[in-house]
Length: 185
Image 1 (cartoon, one colour):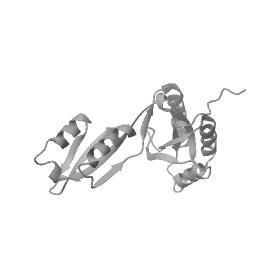
Image 2 (cartoon, one colour):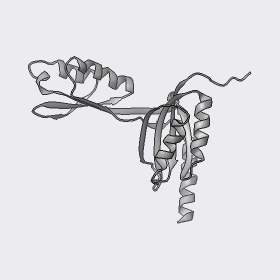
Image 3 (tube, one colour):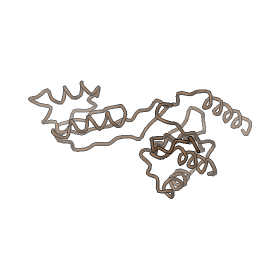
Image 4 (cartoon, helix red, strand yellow):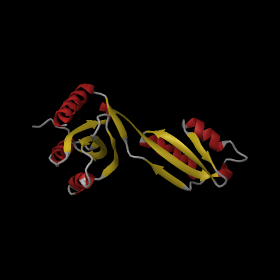
């Protein structure tokens, strides 16, 4: 009998790739054609010049994420895919809230919420205030829930950004990519 984890949980896929048109669409297709939902997705340059990084969060079983990683790894222009559980990474999201300025006047409710949730005011305009909160999804949603009674004009949250705790595997791989990149050029 297999001891493999069949429990659905959050996994963060880190995809190192070349910055090529259409690659993100192909990666998304690999995931969605299996009827898995992408909970969050971010794209950015990596610490190695010329290499991009996609950070994708999905809720699947360990077997499913292993198969996803193998399928994504087969894509042309994908250099390497790793997957991690939440306890193997340090991760954050950023959220912005636009609330009416009028709720700020004659009350310290907004100020109290901003302090309580370790958020910060980014802009105060005549009609609205923009507040920023960095944290996990539960943290940003808790502040959204607190603001709902006051009125929220707009809310947006980024996808997950993550840094890996186990450094050896990632560092060794990035060094090999760098050496490969230098030898090609």
